[in-house]
Length: 316
Ligand SMILES: [Zn+2]
Image (cartoon, rainbow, N blue to C red; front, side, top):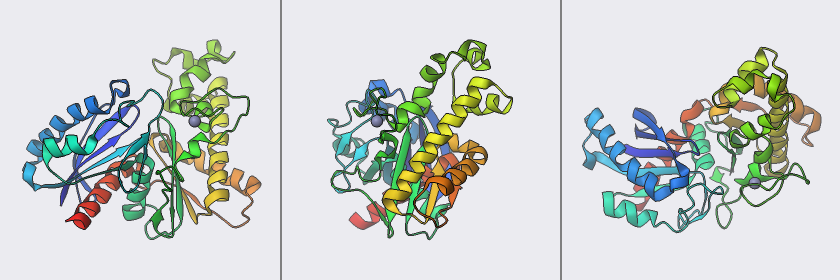
């Protein structure tokens, strides 16, 4: 059951053919989110066809299409309600279903990217068999998703459990892309990192100033070498992600928390700090384990492929 899958991030789009949890071929392209979702789909379609050619899988053998997108997506209708400010801004008005139907005539399913990542971890990864689980994805932004009693928490419009990155942690903070103020994302996410570093008085003496782009990979690498600003940014970010973890536990009472997304590659540093912070500050006095995503950065693509295959089977 081969599926065309796309994990649309704020920076890159992962495209793959996935068959029952196995990635047969994957390619990454630049997201270019300012150009919109429609333009992204125009670039995604030929890559999917190329992946077919490379794997020897005929186009007709693709049974479903799945897209994980960084947006608030209604659970039943698939309506895209909201996207991160300035990114894929056309998505709420773009007729994605009609576009896919006209181009490929295949069953398609799309949902929030953190939901897809969590579905991947529950089906194939670290949360296998767990009924109540929360996830924090540390990518371009900070995504969250929650599954309660085996069901993805969605609410009326798909927002429930997804907005952990948009809890206010600084009441005097800057306006976020979501419209709220002082969000987790405005203080500890890849998109906010470069400006945060540049505004620090430590910036000119920091090795970060010599980096072509300031990423968390650079922050963790240089923090390990003792760079003062990198250490400060690392400590502040981990604290904010730990606060997000505590908020998820307080709100949803999961038995497991999964940390995913690109930055989770630094989980060996992040997770012990999170455990310590949770033990010190969480109301829950029982142990809530925090584990890095077993599928790493592939949780989203495997998760959306699984959800799309399941949805196609159901609607057949
Ligand atoms: Zn926000």
